[in-house]
Amino acid sequence: MNTAQLTPFFMREPFQAFVLYLADGRSIEIRHPDFASFERAGVTIWVFHKDGELELIDPNLIVSIRTAGPADLDQFVR
Image (cartoon, rainbow, N blue to C red; front, side, top):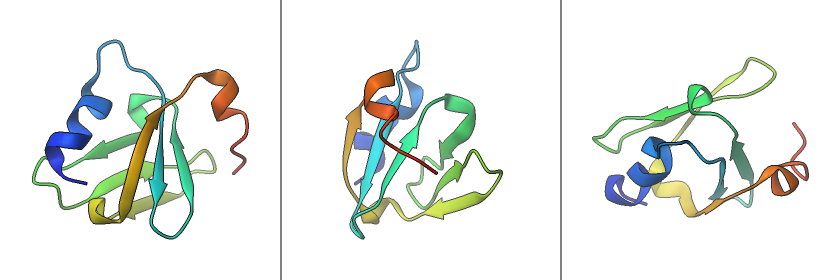
């Protein structure tokens, strides 16, 4: 995905949780704006997981993004 497609999800006011679907089949939930950010140049997405781990994701590996409510996010376990 490109920066123009990602920006609305990361910058939405008020923030709404969303899920990144990656090319390798993983799904990564972004529950709060403090737990993810991206470079506007579109080079890297930084995801801070609940367990304290940091993951850097290449935006080209994101195949889709979907907004999610609390019930949707409960299915993801880390």
